[in-house]
Image (cartoon, rainbow, N blue to C red; front, side, top):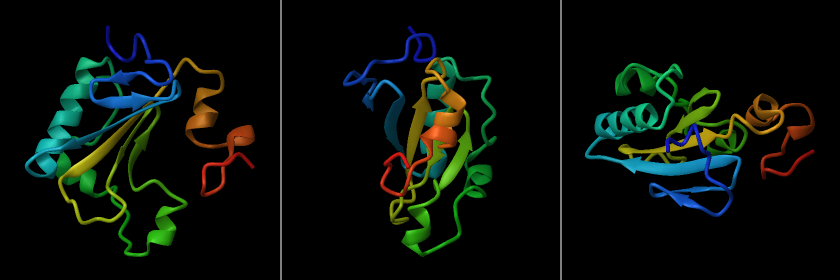
Amino acid sequence: MALRDGFPPEGLEYVGGESDGWEYRTVFSGMNLKYSYDMIKAFLEEEGYGDVPIPKDATELEYFRLPTRNRQILLFEDNGYIHFPIKILFPVDGRNKRKLTLCVYNENMEDALLRFHRKGKYQTDVFGQVI
């Protein structure tokens, strides 16, 4: 069964990633950024997320990388491409140029869109604590 049709419950490892019931997170690391991104695209297609708009290639994805060396800014924003229900994130340290983290969120949870964007009663501080 595809991820989109049966979101993994908390604590379940699925295809090398982990789920807390709300967020499924896994890392892709190919020979270079292009290969890593191609793996993500194939994974999303296989898991039922082929209709979610994503950058057409790794070059386009690079435009979503935050152009900052200040790590403090990265505490407040995700560094990468974000479109409900997925995030494709670059590493915080920026040294591993071929690694990408894919986060997929459970669309069937109550208030999923608010949770995804951390709005309303789901607004969080930099440590992930609800405020």
